[in-house]
Image 1 (cartoon, rainbow, N blue to C red):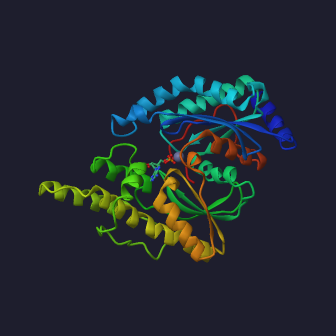
Image 2 (spheres, rainbow, N blue to C red; image 1 turned 30 degrees about the vertical axis):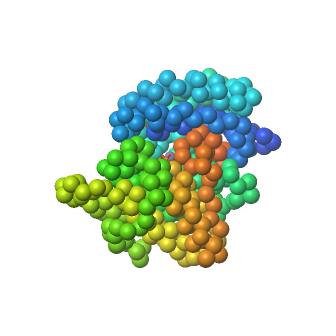
Image 3 (cartoon, protein in one colour; image 1 turned 120 degrees about the horizontal axis):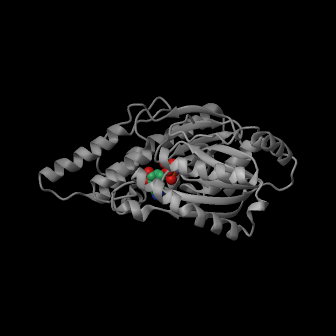
Length: 350
Ligand code: KG4
Ligand code: ZN
């Protein structure tokens, strides 16, 4: 019964002038709800971060994350509606991250979204978190439209994709082992920077220089990447110095790590544009906040006649606005409309 009505309402929304989508995100350690109009105009984007809670454990503790999502959701919803100056009855559809991510954390968001959609009797749209990240660019650049090449760099993913349209992606290359963000976070922990590592590596790298050669890219002729060798080489380097009782050159390690992690990726992303014939490259995911990547990829793009887009900082890391945006494009393209039996899935393909 619910789904029959939802299908009819979803059809009607395609003709509606303004469509308001409530986007719900809880795949890791940010509880976020946003209201977005027509996929690109953010009316509110409330993010309750759990960083402080997980810092003392040196990383995200899944069970703790799930519990904190439960406690945060109602307040985040209230603030998101009041920031947007709307009420629940103004919302046309609910979009929710159903994967990929921490299963318990995802389940909280999915259950919350299902209850809201059922109670309001409005369509529920499932969103792939990673594709959601790409939509941060559609929010920031109102005239940006596919097709283009996408570079996805996050805590769980590293991929180069051809974004053929809003809902069709072709995978060009991906990591064969660790994701880039995961490697930065692990090295950061070993050199004592703590959690979350990526932003701290970014900061410390600015005080250092590329003076340590860790590894050579063994996949330089392909579009795939590997970060586990680099991560292990960094960690071994640190342990070696510790055993000898020497100081750890934290800033130089950060600068060298960034250089060796990002330089091959930058070359591959630009090469993908050339091989596939694109002049536009959009970067997405938490690691797109990195200053080395932003500066050097923009420069490399300019040298090769490629315009490189990065989301604004607030939209680089996990947030509900990008999920609402993806929900809108899914809805308009007949993708992701789901019944109330939706399950969270920890691993889903891109
Ligand atoms: O996209 P995201 O928020 O979560 C996932 O979907 O995985 O990405 C989180 C990742 C973490 O690994 C974090 O360390 C990294 O993004 N990150 C950064 C920076 N800001 C966040 N890495 C490098 N430099 C940054 N400035
Ligand atoms: Zn993410």
